[in-house]
Image (cartoon, rainbow, N blue to C red; front, side, top):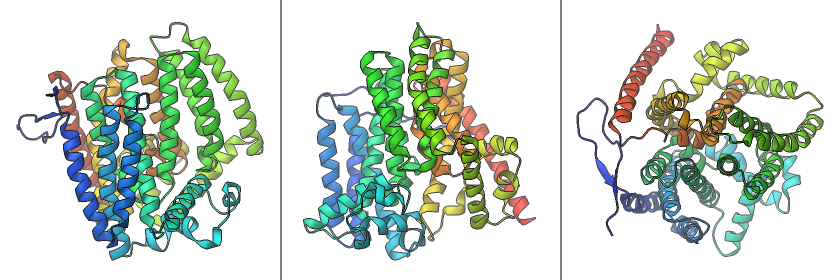
Length: 486
């Protein structure tokens, strides 16, 4: 059956090539091609067909689950297939870095090597979540990895890192599915926006990094995405069923974030504040303020008491200590005289927040710093920077549309906007680590779908903003060269 064709911009803004019109079904077509290349890249990297069996197993199991009525549908299955295929390809590339180039961040040092050792070493057999808390953060992710390694080892597979990485790929692809569901809630079943979101998600370098590196970020991304989805669902429909789902999700997230990344324990409480703010500023409240305020009070009180007891009553001190720890780490990694340390990290708080907020979206500078054979981690961050160059103008246009059009100031959209801006400021204040911001990027991508790129007005606005942004980035890189070498 022929499907409606929609528009996806694939041309350079500096050319006059007509916009290519791509049918929705081509997502599946290209996903299958990429899937084949992904299998080849993993076979070349590991010299074994075992990674292919593992990859196909997780792919088919979750595609089957997503095809069940009430769980997912055609759009969710396509999103899962495309994102899974792309991330699996990059997993093969990072494996090449680890095996052929002896990437130290994956093999001998760094979080990826650390988590792989904790997940596979017999020295930690029989340990549970509470036991791993005294050894490392991310105990939930470690226990999940160990379970998978043990299960597949029992049936004859070696404990290759591809097992843990394939689980990460699955979590990132499922995060894309939650994003598709949020698009359906915010914009309705808009096929063009769902398609654009799916392709955009699959092209994000940060998600490649989360999926392809043996780290806990994929678990954090999925947890944050699920909680965000529950909030969007509730803010769109203030029913008792959605409220119950949100309360349960918030309480579970509140307990689990401490087992994934300690500083993220503040997230559920911050989302409560964002939900209340969305109700206050929304133009479509219809009595929702009181309902949300009541929920905020009911959930915020026990969470606040727990946080106060956990931090000894000084939440500000807890945040400041995290800020100092990451500043010290940045000093060791980059050197006290690096441009990042000089211009952002070592600045007063207000300047750090302002410039750090901008820096989070355009890091690294220069973008080519990771284009080398030394570390896959830096390579993927460089690709992410190029991805953000295309997304930032679209996000800026979306924010402008929300600010100027009352009909767009709905509670779900405002909530997502507060989420990405608020947590970016938080990360700028503490770690300045773009991986930490990456857990909230699905919110940014949903907002970036606000402009209707099938309309000439929005296409031209985006093109003009993109040109201006690329010019600005050119001069920023030129300034970097001058400051660095002259």
